[in-house]
Length: 255
Image (cartoon, rainbow, N blue to C red; front, side):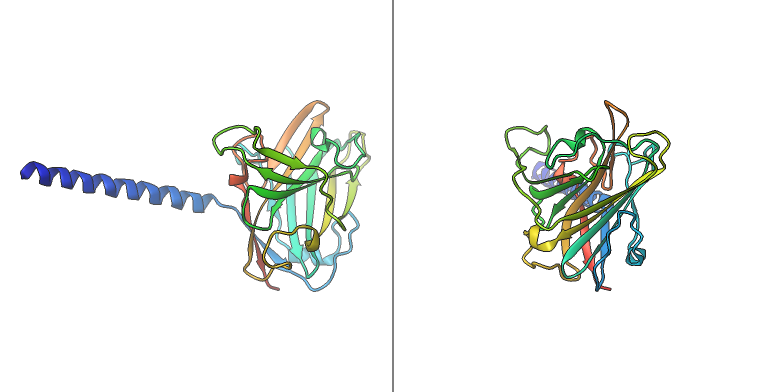
């Protein structure tokens, strides 16, 4: 009888420890989750590539960091987002002393050179998302991703990228503070206007205040041709941007 009581007591203690550990994991996950509050505007942003429309002053700047360490990269990189009844707006500002690119064709491998990237999941189901990338030459790579990879392994047969997808009505502009393909530049800036009608997934065709999507925002820099450096808004823990379980939250808020 005493042995049974002792075993029950030990079992209860182990259960408590397990529940406590699970709660800690959940709390740590919440603490590490990145959330961007995207403010609503009433008019369209004029895209110049310079992000100089006064409406951008309403957006908070978020910093991109080393995707593994979470520390600052070699060059400062910031991103801002806003939305209205038609578009999701994104702008990246990338510090850089050598801005270059050779690729001009749509859906070509601009991620092998220099580009910025937005992975957008309107449905909240992070295995399904849109990939929208822009290079310093304003070349666009857009694809729809079905990501069936395991969270503990590499991309394999479960990963599908549909490059035939075209984000209809997507507008992008690029400005280089310096000269393209020549050392001595200071930075380059990209602006996106992404039509909500082309990134279907949410039950609401136009986001409503307090709605949450999943998103991650990235930069690939190539200070020397053949060498790549990676930046992420929500660190992925590896130089691999398709780790969907590391996506942050895009929260739409009112004015």
